[in-house]
Length: 370
Image (cartoon, rainbow, N blue to C red):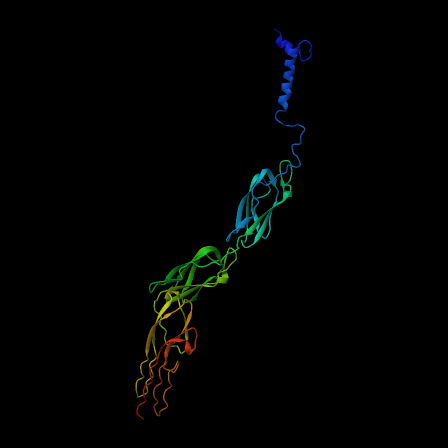
């Protein structure tokens, strides 16, 4: 009937009360077991020296693709750490623009700018600038390579239409110049090198990086030739096109050339689509004073296979003996008229053997009876 009292009394008296004393002993043992069941050793060091912070995200090399001038990635630690100013370092003239340090976190969003994808860089996390809550630093610094992925890169190429054929009288045009990848065009990369047109604007304004540039032209007439200077174009790997790009705007389908007294070089436009129809007339011979009229020049026509950008030499005959016209006669007191010069087209050179078509000149008029 005094179980409760005997239970409390047996803590200090024992013999003869084994059952109750045993119960008291079990109570004490139970209390001791509960105090150590969470596994915490109150005498253990809460900041063991060997438990240092470490990066748990990938530290594999990061590839820089053509056109990349910036990369962003997350840097994850196994715990919250503080990184001091200067804790992130990058080589090669690039710069770490984020995050702003010092900063305490377990994940850091890193942004690196001013990159050249044709170069290689090393991003370093300085072990001495990284601390956890126990002021422990990383065991060693960590490097992440940033590698330009330009191996096997091909030169940029145009995917634009090579020419615009516009209705006669068209004075304005917007020419879209497109490339197969993003390229940088320096100022002055696009210019008019043939014809009277002017460039009003280029979008985006140069210098600029894009895969498409729109050129606004005005003052069109006849044949306009645009040139994109390869030396002022580069892709993300610093590679330039293999050659200058030439583009054409044609507002005519026929071009006439008259007598000038010398060769006339003519660059074949893309609008010709690989073929030109030729119509030639030789010069009429000169008439003699009081005598006969000079004979008409001959006519020749044909179709010539051509290549865009090649130069043909045009020679238009005249009445002064140029390009084969015979000299006036020596009769007195009135000589006969001079012969008309031939008209010809030469391909591949300027020699007589390079002529591909010829229209003969007319003969000079006969002198009157002396």
